[in-house]
Length: 388
Ligand code: GLA
Image (cartoon, rainbow, N blue to C red; front, side, top):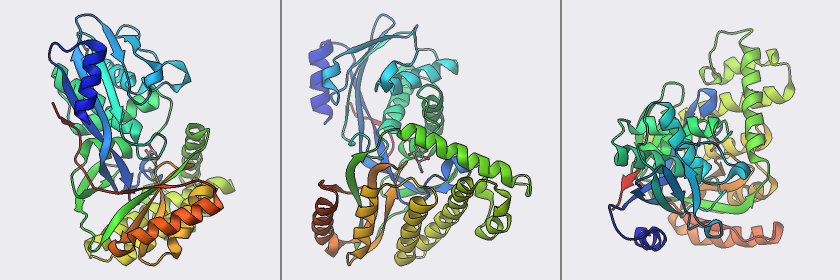
């Protein structure tokens, strides 16, 4: 992958000088959805697919961007002196936003860059192509300019730039998973404190399978921001009757006791999901530690039901994938993963059932939705690195 990118870089910008290549992974979340910005827990892992970035310093203050995923856009020119988001949500807003956020923290780039990128995460699949792009940019800046930042800082800077430069009020999960990924481990992260623990994922006789619905609904960012607002409203109402700082502090019983203080029914549903999903995540990690994969799978299924019915971030196509998966022998658990409104499901499937899983799901999805899903059997990878 990096060789092809390097070749492209040289073709675009010439072969001389110190050209480096960096990588940062995407992520899949096993459980703990829409809990990160509600002060709860998440349990994602980094993938071995992600974003590759080839780069060389320039003598002036220009930044040239090129993506092999958007070849028709050609080289896009920006300047370090005018770091403003471009209209139409252009992809360059993600790396530019990270440069802008570094700059705002006093980490000034003293010269521009030539950049060429390639990503092998399917766009809009809910596997965090944007977070991997933010993290690879941050990691590259740290290495190229000697900025003093940790990988946790890179996660925070990525989230900050996505919130404030790109206008999506995402939580910290995706950037944290990409920046802090560890091969063969998932990250049990408390988003309230950023305390985390690596949990080894060695599923005895089973694998994590990601299924891409191949649909991405429009207005994802605005729907996502709506969910954030609605759960914030639930919290505000609850704060009238109990002294909590986030929904992640409540148990299910406490939520049920105080739920009637949430005036709006939709906000109550959002609040319920946030509280119950957080507790499910804690229980799921506990189950995994006890090698109780069956309980883990049941909690994944319950997570999907809650996202479908209470948080309403699933969609018909993804529901078909999940509900059909539940019918297949050897499927331990299956749910929507990521922000929602399309994208991917994550399933735990016994080794011997993986072929049947792919065949049956493909047939059912083609019949009911008229599309062909794509499958990835997941390998859990490391965080960002310099490759060349
Ligand atoms: C998106 C956001 C994350 C998180 C998930 C839902 O991926 O970027 O911060 O909120 O949705 O769990």
